[in-house]
Length: 335
Ligand code: NDP
Image (cartoon, rainbow, N blue to C red):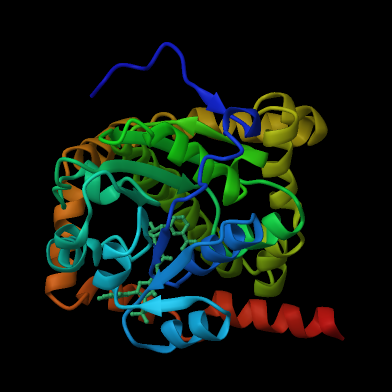
C-alpha cells in the first residue's frame, strides 16, 4: 500500500468559484437515496440545467413529479456536460459499458459518489472525459436535511482523470452546490476512499456489531433484563454522547468526562483484548479490500443472486430477542 501522505488538502467554500457550473448541463443518473438529495440541493443552489436519467420506474415518476425533466440513462448522459452516476455501486459495472460510456461526449465529466468501481477496476472510463469523485460521508437523506438547515456535510473528493482543463473547477462547483463545502472536503484518491470506507465498515463496524450482539446475549443469559440491555447499549443515547465527545473533545481526552471507573475498566479490558489477534485480522481485512478481493467477491455475490446478503437481511424479521427488547422498550417509553 502507499505510505501515508505527508499533507492532505482540505477544501471549503472559499475554494469554489461562484460561476463554476454556469453553462454546464448536469445529469443526475439515478434518483435514489443520494440522487434525489443531490438533485434537489443542486437545484436549490441555483443550478438550472438539471436532467434526471433513470429507468422507467417509481423513482422516475417521483423525479418528474418533483419538477425534473426525466430521460433514459443513455439520453441523459448524451444531453449533459457533467453526469453524476448515482446508481448502486454493484450496478455501475453493468450499466457503464452499455448505457454510460457510449453516450459520453468528449470534454464532458462523469462523477462518482464512491470510489468503489474506479478503485477496483470494475469500470474503464474512456479517455477524453473528466473523471471525478465526490463521495459524501453522510446518508443522502441527512445530506438533504443538513442542506436545508444551512449546514454542510463532509466528503472525500478527487480528480481521477482530467481531460477538459476545468476538472477541479467543476468538482469544487459541485461540492459547493450540493452543500458539501459548507462543512468541507478532504482530497482522497478513489482507491483511498474505497479502502477506508470498506475497511472501517468491515473492521470497526463488524467488531462493534459483534460486541453488541455478544454483550446482549451474555447480559441476558446472566439474568439482566433484555430491555435494560438495549437501553444501556444504545437506547438511552449515552453511547452516542461518547462518540460525540470523541469528536468534540478528543478520543483520549473524552475519558475525562466519563469518570475514573469507566476509564479504569475500559483500560484494563482493552489491555486484555490487545492480547488477541485483532491487529492481524484487521490487516488481513485491509489487504483483501485493497487488492480488490472484496469487490470481486461482491460482484460474484450479485451474479449468484445475493445468497449471503439475503441471509443477512433475513437474520431479523423482528423475531430476534434484541428486536423484541427494543419494541418493548419503545412501548414503555411511549407510555
Ligand atoms: P440506490 O440504491 O438508492 O439506487 C440509485 C438509483 O439506481 C435508483 O434510481 C435505482 O432505481 C437505480 N437502479 C438500481 N438498479 C438499477 C439498474 N439495474 N439499472 C438502472 N438503474 C438502477 O443507490 P444509492 O443512492 O444508495 O447509491 C448511489 C451512489 O451513491 C453509490 O455510488 C453509493 O456508494 C453512493 N453513496 C450513497 C449514499 C447513500 O446515502 N445511499 C451516501 C454516500 C454515497 P430502482 O431501485 O428503481 O431500480
